Image 1: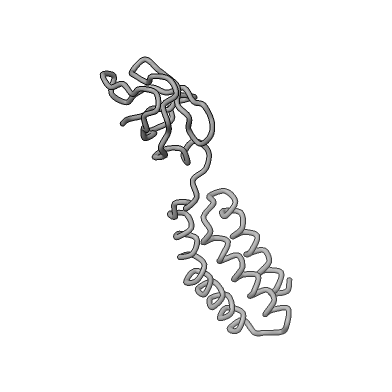
Image 2 (image 1 turned 90 degrees about the horizontal axis):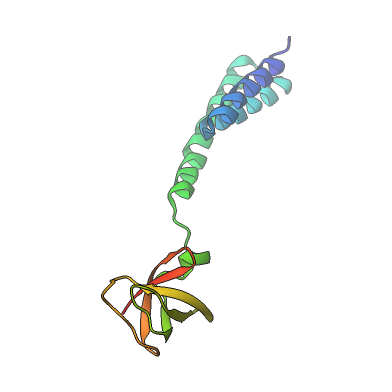
Length: 141
């Protein structure tokens, strides 16, 4: 069997743990094995094939791996949905206390309750949204 076929088998063999474990390092080694296969198909000797495999794999590890790690730990800059409503100001439409009430938040009418059960806010007051609990905004003055 030709050397390039062995390199393809190695690439597939490295691709299997990539799929099973979702570890991108295996994918980088699989790409290195593909590069070794291409080198073998072009007539490169075993030393050239091995050097190409090592060079491509190490280059991918040094360049791509830090990018993948950084993208996994980055918090999205743009909040959406109910997360975007937390921290916004609202106007009280109907008295809000620990039992409930109504506010206008982001152009919509929301049911609301105060964060502190003893606190109450009269109509026209401005309140801050602390969190969204289901379909109810939890607010404080």
